[in-house]
Image (cartoon, rainbow, N blue to C red; front, side):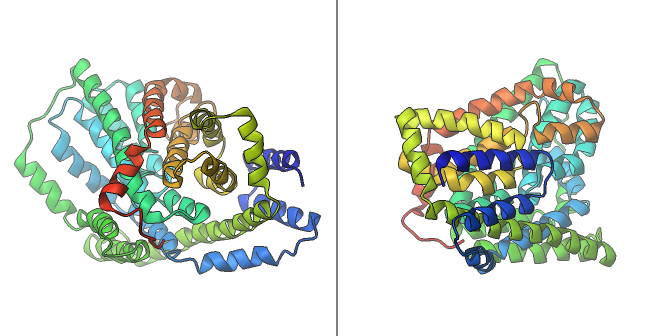
Length: 434
C-alpha cells in the first residue's frame, strides 16, 4: 500500500477522532482493514495486546492512574494550595505562583489536563481575583496551569509515550525535569513581574502559618519526594514507585485524613480502572497498527519523501513543531501519541535526533496544543468550567501561549537542556527497564 494511501487513511482517522468516534474503534478498524487488505494474519494484533499486558513496568499505568483519581477526589488539592500559599504569599503576585506550582503538581499526579482545571480551578480563580489580579489575567493563568505538569514524574503521557516509542521511561522522566522547570520558571517570572506592575499587595511570611500548613499536609508532603528520589536514584523501579504511591495514597486519604470513604473508594477504583482498560485496549491495537506500518516499510518511504523536501535537521524540527502544534489542538495527548509517534520517531531518527529529546519536544508541543486556538482542549474545558465565552479564553491566554512557544523553541533547538541531567547521572549507557 502506497504512502499516499496511508496518509489519506491517517487524515480520515483524524477526522473520525474529531467528530467523537471512540479511539479504540478507529484504530482497531483501521488496523483490521490494513491487515486484511494485504492478506496478512490478524494474529499479530492479538499478540500485541497480549504483549502490552506483559510489558515490563506496565503495572505503573493502572497504579499511577488510581493514585491520581484518588487524590483528585480527596481534599489533597486544597491542602496543597494552602501549603504553597503559606510559602509564597510574600512575593508580588504570590498567588499566581501558587496557581502555577499547584497546577504543575496536580497535572503531574493526575496526568489529565481537564481534571486539573476542573478540580482546582474553582479554588484558584476566585483566590487570584481576590488577591488583586485582573479577571482576564486570572482566567488565562488558570487555563494555562492545567497543562504544566506533563513533563514531570509521574506523568501518564510520558509512560504511554515510552511504551509506544520503546524509549526508557526513566530517561524520559529525567529529561523532562529541566525543560518542565524552565517553562514553569518563565511563567513564574512573568506572573511576579505582572503582580509587581499592578502593585499586588504582599503578605509577610508567617512562621506560624507555614508550620500550620506543613502540619496539615505532613502526610502528603513525602509522596512526591519518595517517587522522584526513588526513581531517579534507581532504588525503586517506576512500577514499584507506582505501587508505593497507590498504597501511600490509600493510607493517607482513606485512613489518616478520611476524605475518602469505602463506597467512594470503590467508585474511584471503578472509574480509574475503566480508563486504564480503555488505554490498554487502545495501546494494543496501536502497536498492531505499528507492526503493519513497519512490515510495509511506510516509515522508510515517508523518510525518503521528506528528505527530498527537507534537507536539514533544523528544517525538520521547524516543520515538526508546526505540525505537532496543530495536532495538539485537534487531538487529546493520548490519541496523538498513539497515532503519530510510530510515524514520527523513525523519521526523526533518520535526521539524527536523539529519541529522548524527540520525546520531550513531542510532549512539549502537546502541552502547548491544549492552549492553541481555535480548539485547544484547555480552552473549552475552562470555558465550560468558568462559564466564559470561548472567544474570551482565546484572548486571555495569548501572553501565556507566546511564553510557551518561546520555551518550546529553547527546548527544541537546545537538546542539551533535555539531555544534561541524563549525561550528568550517567544513565545513557545503561539499559534501564520501563
